[in-house]
Image (cartoon, rainbow, N blue to C red):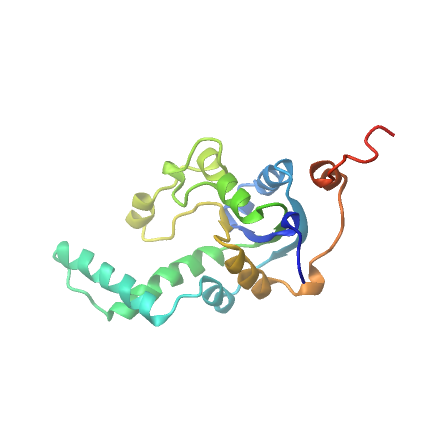
Length: 201
């Protein structure tokens, strides 16, 4: 299907820490206030096998990341206990453990440059270095250092797709096309109607 620029879609997950801290409405309102339209929403318990597909890493990625872990261990005088590829897979296992710790809210959002707009609103991956005014910058204080110290994934509230292609691949894992609702909002008419037809009526 050919889409207009204002019909670009992106995929978002409000992670277990967002749910547990009762921030779902607050975060969703940020997206809506920016002019994005919610076209699908699913409150679910994520499954590890889906998350491994979602993060979409191959053996080369696992090997490279695992080699980094081994170098870090050896620099600390620690003898590695497993192969590099397993250390690499541990990164995704830690993410999967975090993402399956409680229910998540999966969303499809639509709007002009939706991927870029959501990325800007969410902020950088590490909350402590994310800008003030972003979701991560405003609502959490976790850091890579603290996460490493506690041997866990960084708790940064939201996952968002980084490109249109990634968004389409990810949303296909979590939603079927018939679960994504096509409709028009009054907000869209104001934002995208060239002549603002009918606003004086």
